[in-house]
Length: 432
Image (tube, rainbow, N blue to C red):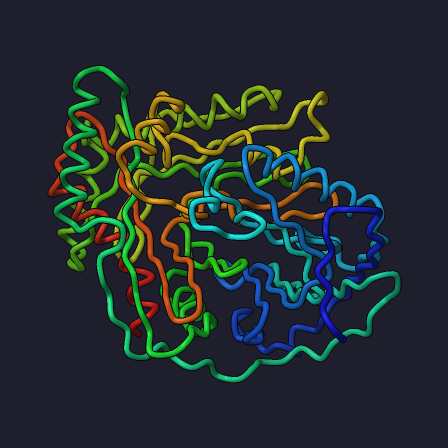
């Protein structure tokens, strides 16, 4: 069957059916090992999640209405879809995977037709949640036969990987950080998050399944994702909406691990006491709590962050939770993601001033880096992470991204080192 790309017009009538699979069908096969080479989609964490392939429908949006247009399209698609869900867990039934541009004008400067934000409804989804495993088929107008689910071929590892500077060199980026610190010290703003990129050229077009498998194995506590040539393993959940409960994991404040357990324990303690990192973290937490408050009847914000340990770095982390109020029951996970983006963890404080400074001095089109990536179901529930520890690719060229929160006490040299640490997950996934 030929995949069909469906534009934003007319009532699209889909039929989605989810049926359970016996656990023995997959025998604990990682979900990323089920993906074909073409049109693969992924959202997995610690063995659970959903993967998909094919396209039953798709919308590309751009500009400052990218979230609104995508949300309206999804409501229309969901309203006209017949859903036969015999599983009844988050991620079963009709779902779409999505990723969005960071900035309103992203994609235009790169000349991407149709913009750089997308929602994709796959033809096949395989999911796992605890002991429950299922397969969903999505087709136009009629039920599709349940496909055979089995591991696919071993993907080719990237070869001949050569890294070069992206938009700026390390030294140039340190100068940009120094400029931002001066602006903060002058009272122009409190915090700004600056990003940099790194380019990898490969000997052959990338088979993204290879780095996806490596990321999922090396960073099981992160959300490993792939949507429309964007992939990565993010530690930060922008927003999860599940049956009226809203949660968000905020990360800001970072220190690199050494590999020595005793030394890393001491570093974790210093991170938890660092006035610079605590200040950066507070801005990020407050921006998320303030953005969620209009939608929630109650919110819970812990008084102090905890230290999240990842293989390469440690972060200050806070889990914010809320309950959607009656007035906003129709607000979907995508609506909430749009309201939260960009948080101070990836933009700055005040938001508008920080975004203006980013546009002025960063010299980088972020594309879909540091923007919402995840999935949504027919009820509006879903999970949207922030596309960190990520890269976009086109054929044999890959652009890796990293960013750092800059406050008055920031050191350009230390921020460059932090950015290099944040590039490690994707670098290692490309080089093996």
